[in-house]
Amino acid sequence: MTDRQESAKAFSDMHVPGSPLVLFNAWDAGSARAVSAAGAAAIATGSWSVAAAHGYGDGEKLPLDLAIANLARIVDAVDIPVSVDIESGYDDPAATAKQMVAAGAIGCNVEDSFAADGTLREVADQAERVAAMRRVLDAASPGFFINARTDIFFQAPIEDHDGKMVKAALDRAARYTDAGSDGIFVPGVVDLALIEQLVAGTTAPINIMMSDASPSLRQLADVGVARISYGPAPYLAVMRQLEAEAATVIGWKGSQPD
Image 1 (tube, rainbow, N blue to C red):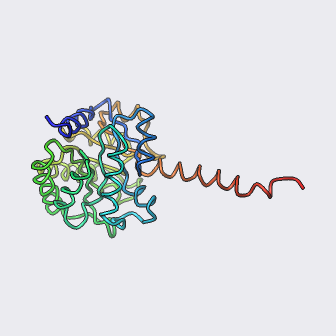
Image 2 (cartoon, rainbow, N blue to C red; image 1 turned 90 degrees about the vertical axis):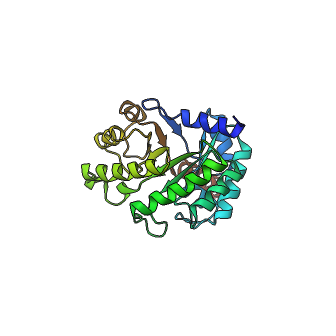
């Protein structure tokens, strides 16, 4: 196998139910190096963080060429596999797939909501978008890991999450897996019983995103989650610390006695 295929296979093999791959999401080359130095097995970007670091809002407001250039710098900065959050794949997911490969990624997240407003695409439309990416990736980068994200649980507040939403998510997961996705990413769900139902309802590795309301890493592992992401949390934590330290230094005169 080529180095790229070996890297892609190694990344795929990290998705083990009960012993999940934990991804502390990075946003640029510097943060990727820091996460790698901490012992990470792989790097994954978070679209919200990448956009914010470049001065843009989320929702494909970051121009695709900047997203790809940032990805290339991250790949060059670390010696471990890199997966990119490419939102919904922009206007042409197949063309975007070619650019991800050229930049050196071996995996991606692709979501099933419209970037403009967060509403869900028709499942058949999204399945075809996944299939279009799969066709390109099979030719250009065999083994490339597509993590198909469904935003079902972002369509309602946490207190309204229920088994019907699990079924809807699993129905989409089945279509996306048939279209060529390797994993299923279900952000927004925090109820452990519902997460356990998601894991039981598909053979694809399930990815959950951590939040303040999430179960612990141990609990998620115990119900068979195979991948855990941190999304924008690392970026927000670093920015809060930066702001606090900057405020202390900038305001030093006011804190000193005459």
